[in-house]
Length: 292
Ligand SMILES: O=c1ccn([C@@H]2O[C@H](COP(=O)(O)OP(=O)(O)O[C@H]3O[C@H](CO)[C@H](O)[C@H](O)[C@H]3O)[C@@H](O)[C@H]2O)c(=O)[nH]1
Image (cartoon, rainbow, N blue to C red; front, top):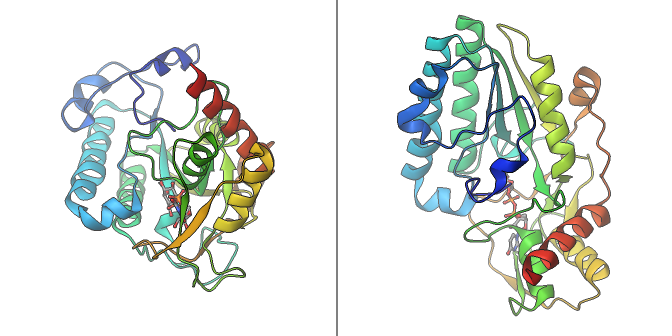
């Protein structure tokens, strides 16, 4: 959830794991020459709006680098991969909640690049015996104690709304009020980062040689932008002014997950599904960071 793992987050790596900071575009081969039990591949450009304006950053930065990583894994016989895929691979879904067997028709470049990587992983897993799992994140939020969202340029809804609560911004912009949803604002499925982390460990444990399995990770409940802002008002006790702005390019109207497959096959049990809990943890993190 952090853009910059080099600023202190290496300390959070559990025993038996190694934190490596490197430019995978150039160094994956050398890195994996040391024997690794598996790779958790989080690195990506992940801003929907930016991906529409600067697609080259996404095709080069996401796809080309991931192919280099896959080649290094093949070359050095690294057996397992857990990849951060995304709800954006589905685009505007034809049914809700979204199951993994629905068509993948991304509406933005970010989602298209993640889908391309998913396809490459399937080929490499099948041909080279890698045990691979793609986790399709819906909207990750919340915080785990001192670990939370600290993007260099903030574009995500909950951190922005909490910055308004703190007085760091005057208001939050609602990107469109004319979507085909109950209140006209976009609906998303928010998942706590700690639940997301738990799913990664389960994925690593369950990765099976030669197979690429795909799991959606969400709570199965959608919240509109207006509902998120209202929850933030309740949790923080601040009024949080909001204004309607034009739609953001590339946004689907509604993204809600079915995570039945992750529950059934991985035994994943989200513990912090309540939006008030998710916002509450994000608020604690944001306040503590502001105070320090
Ligand atoms: O200031 C803002 C920021 C966001 N939104 C809206 O709030 C919703 C959530 O937006 P986020 O930017 O927080 O999250 P996204 O749904 O765009 O993005 C998330 O889902 C994407 C896939 O769709 C990617 O995986 C991405 O990395 C992940 O954060 C969207 O409808 C967006 O239009 C606003 O109205 N105002």
